[in-house]
Every structure is written in C-alpha cells, then in structure tokens.
Image 1 (cartoon, rainbow, N blue to C red):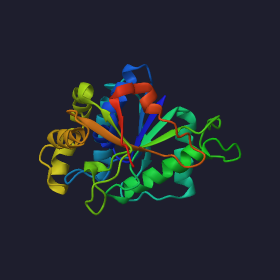
Image 2: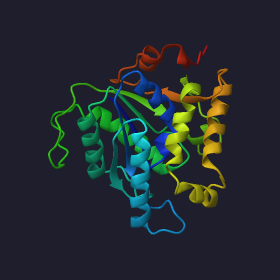
Image 3: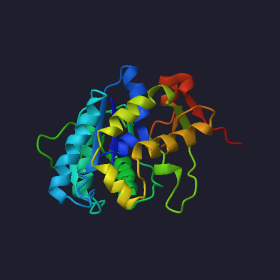
Image 4: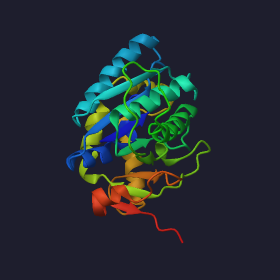
Length: 254
C-alpha cells in the first residue's frame, strides 16, 4: 500500500500522481487522502458547497488509479498541529498500514502544506506506538513498523522565498504524464480559483511546465522530484529505486 496525503484536493495530483501511476502499474494499491476539505477554494461558492464539489472531484480523480479518496475534514487555513488533528492523522496511517507514505515538502510555499508534512511525519512514527490511543470510532490497531516517508517537491519546485528547493531524487514520469493529466482534469473547479488567486490560467499547462522543468534537470521529458525522510528511526534505504529501477534518478552530492 502507498498512502499519498495532500492538504487540499488536487495537491496529490499536482505533486505525485505520475509516480503513483508507476507504482500502481507495479501492483501497489494506492490510497489518496487530504487533511482539508478545500472549503476555501472558490471565489464564488460558499464553503460547504465547494467542499462537496471538491470531494467528488477528488474521488473521481482517485478512481483513475483505482484508489479510494479520504478527507480528514479539516478546514483550509484552519489546520493546526494539535492532539485531535494528530489523532486523525495517526488513525489514517494505522488504517492504511502503508509501506510508503508520500506527503508535502516541509519547505512548501504555504503553512497548511508545511503542517501536513509535520503531521504525517509525526503520524508515521506515532502509528506504531501501542499506548497512543486515537480516540476515533472503531480505532485501527497500531502498525507493526514505521513506513517509508517520502516528501514531494515543493509546489513549483520553490520554497516560500522563491528559491529552488533541494531534492534527493527524481522519478521519470514521461510514460505516466497522461495519467497525471487525466487525474488533474477532474479538478474542474480549480481552474477559475487558480486564475484568480495564483494568476495561473490553465493548471494543466502549469503542471506540465513544472514537471518538464524538473525533467530537464535529469535529461528526461517529465519528472517528479522528492526527498526521503532519513532520520531515526525511519527506514532510509532507497525504496523507490528498488521498485522503479532506472526510472529513479538520485542526486549525486560530493
């Protein structure tokens, strides 16, 4: 199982969908989740209405990979790291019991994304602690081990200061860019939002531009970039290289 956790509906599609498609093709079950409901993602619709629309869009996008979509129900721009939210994140990891967790870069451009990275780092560790009770309905059993934790590229490949973020490795997604596009197309509500808030008129072209820019850095058409959490006690061997072989291209640092 590979669990991909974004903050908002469409984050996973922008950042890691090409790699998820490659893993799906190699027999791994995929689960897509978000911390927040996307309730701030409209200039016209009120929170409950846009949340319902975005839940359906995210569910349809996940189905492209045969994956379920789970929303933990936090409100955009209200996400905080407290014990109730930690409890939800831990329960998500316990129920999925994944080999690999993918989430946001801790260096991403907005605080909700950074908080999601921290919540999932904590949840991957805490999910295996038997005395941590999540206080959720029908709680899952603690996991037997800590999963691999892989951070996606910062959105657009830059941090909050606009500086290019450092990455550990790239995945060549040239063969799955069409799947990534198919998934992102389902997030129809976000075209007008991104045009108004981010000055991006066509989010598909923006996604391809970002993927092409990372691909250029390693000599392929399209790529997604990642960092792996290597701190104690997380597993630190190159799991995606083991699964994806030459499609994984690691940075050599002297």
